[in-house]
Structures are given as structure tokens and as C-alpha cells.
Length: 616
Image (spheres, rainbow, N blue to C red):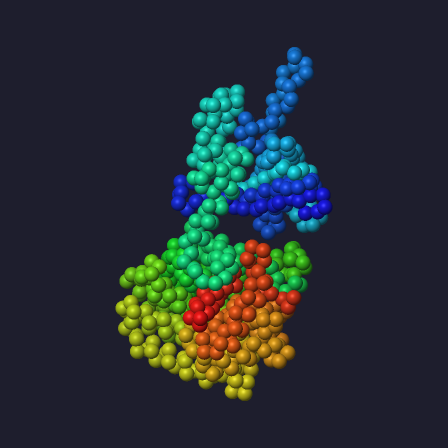
């Protein structure tokens, strides 16, 4: 937007309706730019960096055979009767081919949306960005759009084989349209490689006919399945949509985030690759989806996780994260040739924490399985058959055999194992939920006595070894009870301790203090822990954690059932947090003083809304 004009940019991935499995899922990334008012000079650049800018590529501008011949604009007729009219010049596209043979093509469709507007002219060219580290030419198009003119660009991996294109010389227009009508209702060569027309692009995003299966309709249909009726519904549904985007449908896996090497602090070193499926994060996500009534996604993830249980490590343990296909290889590599976001190095792919021992994951997973079974009658979540019950029993047996071991816990510290309080709480949860399932679902439990003994011993141990008598709060670990950690806010959320328990209230109030006064709160936002007091083996600074802030909201909600002042504080903190969401309701993992977050937002809103309703 400027004084001369206004342009609108819309990015989307086409998605057919879930009720129409016959419609193809086109793996296209689409960007539409339209001039709304006045005139706008715009520059389109497309600069792929194959294999993280490690592979060279070629760039070719070639005729685009996916544009219907009948849609090409012919040259004006010649003024000389003896000179035949020129045939339409084929529209061009850009083809990028990596040295490893991976191919992308960039196509476009110009159009006018007003009768008085002409179709804009688009000329593709190449751009040399090798001085910036690129290993092949980029593509560009300099556009001058006026009101009513639009151009849609489509980036895709083209089908391996393109079908032969018919021309008007081979067939009449009526016969061409009749023979090339495809399942999408547009002229198509194949279902997965249709002719690229403005009608097709419009139908993929906005409705032309009431029965047209379109991207918007898919998302409307999906979010309408939500059973949430509480307060802050818009924020909750926006978070649900964000979670849906993190699900890899072929396997049911849930990624923590579709990003890698975005720094936790600009210029810092905490730059991780989150494009994997963490047991912990996925379990939190499943909890939120069940609460909202999205059982199809919940069941798909349950199938994914039970497949991992069938293929446990030789010692009976689970890996803390897997690839979206269920693989275990996530070797961490530093890409030293890349500068990183705003100079934040190193850039990492893969995740070295994949082989960490983080024992808390068993608690999150068992809590999730238990909630699913508890909700079975109402939501239709996957019921445990005999095989699944045995797998669950083996999981709890592993926990009972290892609950005395130290680990690296939820924050994935990278120096030494400790007896982290959070992990001990979640190990207690794992055994407790196993016992509850045994009672409610007749889970085979030959080691019930050992489970009971381990659960009770863990509780007593946490209450004695994690408690800081002088500071009157639960410490980060048995070894460092003087370090405050907001992860202990999980206690009442998993029913380890009542929200009104004096020890928990004292810990909560300590966390709510500012960092200058020994707490972890700043502007109603909560830090994980004080990085200047706890050596996590990473270094660098970080902002407040959205996950911790929302845990604090839930903890205040639980405590607020018995102290109205704390419930008021919960509402204030939650509404302050909502102000940090962007224009489409998304939030980051951290917020400076100036994925998991959306899961805990749903949980916080659900429980806070329910408590407020009871309090009326």
C-alpha cells in the first residue's frame, strides 16, 4: 500500500473438500497479487535454494504447455490481406532443475477482474544472485498493475510425465472442451496436471458454484466440527486451525513447527529444527483436539504412536521425536555456509536432541491415552483393543523400571542429566494413568502392586527432594532446588497436586514475581527459568515462553476456584496474552520483553471458560 495504490497478496495451498475424496490434492503453492486501487509497481522474485543451498541448479524459461491453446491471446490481425495472422505466442514458465534432478516449475495466469481493465503483461526473466550465495539463477517478473488487474503465480513440482497437448488445429473448440473436461470441472489433461486457467484458480480458492469443492470450503467444513462453546471462541478456533496445519495426514504425525533455525533471540545460538514429531508436543496437541471434538485427527495420531510402540527401542524406550514418516534418524547438521535469520548462527537442520533421555514424555503420552479413553463414549476416540492394552502395560512397566533415573527433561538441556522435577511429576502421571486405565478399562495389570508402590514413592520423593524450604517453592531439580522453573506449574493441571495446596500456591506466587524480585514474570508473560542462574549447556538469551504463560493461566484458574483474586488474575493474564497474537491469530513460541503455544491456548481457554461459568 502506498499513496499511488493498494495491492492485495493472497497465499494458499489448494485443498479439496474432505467430503470429496475423488478430487485431487494438487501440491501447489499459489500466490495471487491483485491491484485493488490506483497503480502499483511490483517485483516478483523466485529464488529456490535446493538442498539448503548446497546443490547447484539450472534455470530455464520455456513454453508453458499447461496453458490451454484457446486461452492464449492472439496477435491482432495483419492489415495486409495477403499476410496470414500470426499464431499466439506460447506463454512462458520457469523450470528450475537441481543437480540432484529435483524439479520445480513456476507458472502464472494474468487476468482482469474489471471489464474496463486489460489483462496485464507479464515477462519472466532471470536474476543472478550468486553473489549472495545462491547456486543458480533466480527468476523475476517486474509488474505494473492497475486497478482490476491480477496475476497468480503457481510454484509446484511438475508431474513426472506431461500428457500431449492438443491444439485448435487438431480439434474444434467444442470437441476440445468436451474431451478435456476433468474431475475438477475445468479443462484438464490429467486429474493431477490440469490446464492452468483463471477459472481453475478461482475455483480452488473462492466459490463460483454452490457445489464447487474449494479450499475455503474445506476449512469451513473442518472448523464447524468443533464442539467448543466457551469464551474466546475466535482465538480457540484460530489455534485449532494452526494445529491442523501441523498434521501430516498420510501418517497422522504432528510436527512441533514447520520451521527450522528461527532464533529464540535475534543474534543468539538457540536455533533449532522443529520439523519433527515430538511425543510430548504431539500428546499436548492430541489433548487439545480431543477437547474440541476433532476425533479423526486424534485417532490418526493414536495410530501413529501405537505403531511407534510396536517398534520400541531394544531397551523398551521410545525416542522423544520421530520423522513424520516414523523414522528415527534426525542427525543434526550445522549449515555453516548460511548466515541465518538476521545473522543468527548456526543454522541447523535435524535435531541432536532426538537421542536425548527425556523421561517426561511417558507421562504426557499416558495422560493423552487416558484422556482419549475417558472421552471414548462422548467423542468416539480410538478404543484400546487387547494389543493396545498390552502395549500400554509394557510402557508403564518401563516407567516403573526407570523412574529413579535422571534425564534431560522438557527443556532439552544439553549438558548434564539431572533429576528434574517436571520429569518426576510426569513419571508419576504415567504410572497414575496406567492404574486408572487398569481400573476403568480392565487393563491387564499383573504388576499392579509394583505400580502402586512406585507411584506413591515418587510422590513422596518429589514432595521432599524438590521442595525448597527456605524459598518455599518447588525447584527445577533435586540437585538445584534454588532454581525456579515455571514447568512446575503443571502440577495441578495433571492432578498431581490440588490447585489450592499451600505449597503450590507459594510456588505460583513466587513465579508471578518479576525477575528482579526472584520470579519469572514480566508484563504478565512468563519465562521458563532464569538462564543466568541455570546452566542448560546452550547459552544465549531468550524471551518469555508462551507455553509457560498459558500454563500459568491454567494454574491460576485451578487456584482461582478457591481464591477469586487469582481467577481475576488468570483472566487478565490470558487477555493480555491474546494481544500478542498476530492478525490471523498466530503466536510465536517466545515473546521478548517488547506450536505448543496454540495447544496450551486451547487448554487454557477451555478450563478458564469452564471455571468462569461455574463461578457465575
